[in-house]
Length: 291
Ligand code: G1P
Image 1 (cartoon, helix red, strand yellow):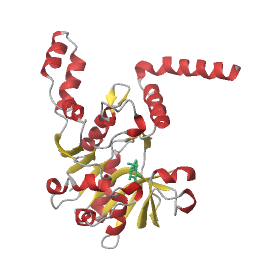
Image 2: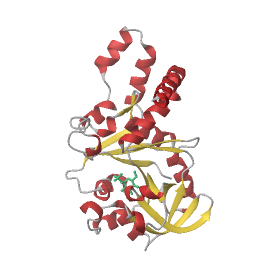
Image 3: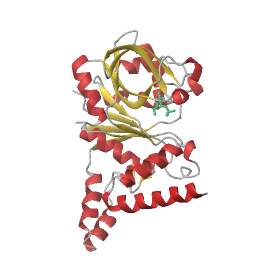
Image 4: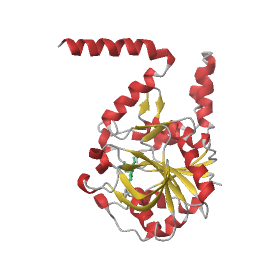
């Protein structure tokens, strides 16, 4: 059973500077909800009971977000603002959330290594904070279902345009069924002209604890960072790894254009904004077409 999840959240968020100079990128909202809350919700909806967030310097707002705030609760209670009050209370009781700090930013593989003691000898999920997935079955649950069948590590992938392969970890292997691959290779951010496929690692993983021993021996790779992708490639020599093509729509919050698109799509799907936002977008497009 996969009951523990790791959410790495120590990165500097340089792609979103200056917004992330004094606030964690994981707290950037999609409308009114910080992205990390969507990620925590996905973990819980997938059956995860225990979450370890790998935080770092300047990330205290994440801890505060999942903590109680009595002053706020009192104010909302007095204002008779019951829905907001309930939401604020719910967030502070979402899951058993633990924090540990990555002391030096040495890459995703290194961040995951901080979870070694906490995870022990169990398989665990990893959810990266810059990806939100909307799906009927939560994507981490999709991976857990495969883990339960194969008892091997599983990584979520999605097809990306050929000109974007250099932003992601890319897999190679053999196709087993429509949405399942057995891996033969993983490569972090390959050159556009040198990528084995355009199936990109989509920020969700189930890993066996064997990965910790391998990370210990993994040298810095791409961008001089200890890459989880490289450690998984080594893991392939000892264990099978599968890739699951996600069923659902992935929102990449890690770059500005996709973040903007996410905002619009989430806005359009909220009943309170939907009609007005559609009208506004039509106006904007019509005005552009006239030019
Ligand atoms: C990380 C991983 C990469 C993965 C990506 C998904 O890269 O290293 O393999 O495809 O997340 O978002 P990063 O976005 O941290 O550069």
